[in-house]
Length: 327
Image (cartoon, one colour):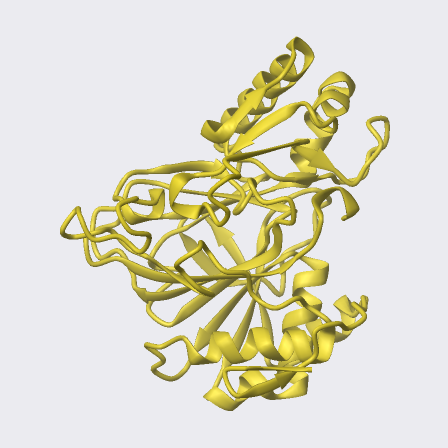
């Protein structure tokens, strides 16, 4: 046991899986929403369609104590296990993200999730995703992260440069983009895996890629990159969904087969991003102030278009880091 923020938490716990899709659908604290472009509507009458990305589970947190209520925490765990994506709406003000901190601690305590990882050598569990207004003040000294700009951010997973990437991350909306920018897009990896050729899946599953660590996220001064695979968790001939780690500008293929496979992956990403069966676009209207989106970082890629509001502010936490090849 150790103490974190005044809580006693276990450093090791067995991770359990629970298939409760039917029972959770009857749970009044959980509702399903269908995303059609930039609109959401109750999806009680929506027919489930294999391989289509249509719905996001939606939980309501009525007060701060929900983050430590076993039923609420179990619902979060189960949605992450089943769907890998969940939206939570807070019915209370929480500018310090205390609910999110307590929720992650509860997932650790009761369901074996690993504790949050630090973002860099100088930055702890939480990272403020917001433009640097001065252009000179950054969370890592003298180094500006992509998330600290107003530029678009293409398809990626978080911490692809870590030997043990976090399985999950969450974004807490503190100030949405008031001018229609900063739309969060998410893409399920399953369809991507189905469309990749067998040769590409085989090459992407081999440790033939050098992945550069962004300067702002270096934790050990002597380590500037890792070498590993882009895909894991499957045999190239199988139809199951792979898991992925990817951020295009950080990846260098180490041989011709790896380069060909990487080019195929990037082409498919461009094709799938316009298909509603594969991609959801969550604008500020779906993610207002005090919304939280939680994602399985191995089963979903995410992207962001250009930020238009310099006051846009999200807070991020990443947790449950495990070796990529062991997933």
